[in-house]
Length: 452
Ligand code: SAH
Ligand code: SF4
Image (cartoon, rainbow, N blue to C red; front, side, top):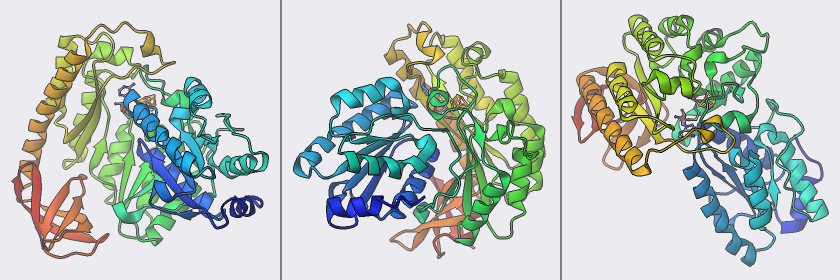
């Protein structure tokens, strides 16, 4: 992973070991990628800093899932113009989903001359070579392609443990082609890490003291499907549950079309797996689900929820929802609202549909005004708020085990309980340690508790 030239070239340019700053947008996968980018560049002589203004190398690890994320990136990249004018030696680098889209890469080439390097996060190991090429030839390196979409084993990882959670990618890419989604176009085909590599990294996390470990993949339920490992996702969960130590296993994201009874049975039988499942439904209307290419019906989805609740009575579900998919009628939107109540979600992450170039949905007729979609989103969030409130009130009086995630000034602390909720707790605890608490109150949409 070490590029023999790079640290010498960097020292020549800056006269010291360069300060590196990474700005990460989007999902947990991007956060996990940034932790590897940091590890890789630190092993090539860079020193991480927390401040873009004093950095010698600034990396933007971008997101393309919605237009709003891209607008933010362009705003922040624009600010680099002044930085480069004042300190021309600064190196500006872009990676991530956004720059994997040809029209964006072209736009950067033409309109953002202060971006020096584009790299492909589907093969992070090529980044040191690209920086070296830029320094050697003195020319921008802007080809967004990489030699191969891979799983990049062996890259050093510098984890941000301040959030008391470790992210552990178990697979990359996506083969699902939901009609609205750009991810399969920018992240390539699905590929799984070998179970032994996952277990090894998991053990390293446990040995490093991580108590909350989240497995990542666009659809963890298809883990191993194309790989011939003979280990599917529930098998992998069981292997990780058997690792010695005290920890909680979480995972994201579980696609309903591949969620099996075996998955829920495994969670029921394994005590270290969180009783929180993020199972994005996207819509409550069968017609919209079909147009979205989600490959399940509302009834099949609800059957999964009912089965899971029958074997894991204390399970909490959360979901993602898209409002205003092309052609969504008022009635279809109302079906999504009723699903929120029927599924009794603990939380939903809801988004207004965002047209993504190159996706099938981008050419579907969409005549609902944005203002109507915004109203629908607000009303849907209000329905969710009431459902959440009921569930949180139901937590009052219960005993919970959680992880202390931070100490507050007034002698209380923040505690993340099994279902992922944050509770403000009176008493003492050490950050990143397990604690037993009783939930005592629910005030202004916040849970309070006391340590036992
Ligand atoms: N692989 C995960 C999610 C990846 S993207 C899954 O299938 O659930 C995270 C969420 O962003 C999606 O669940 C969806 O709700 C939302 N999303 C994706 N594309 C979108 C688009 N074009 N417009 C609005 N929301 C979108
Ligand atoms: Fe996008 Fe669907 Fe893949 Fe999730 S499963 S990343 S929504 S295509």
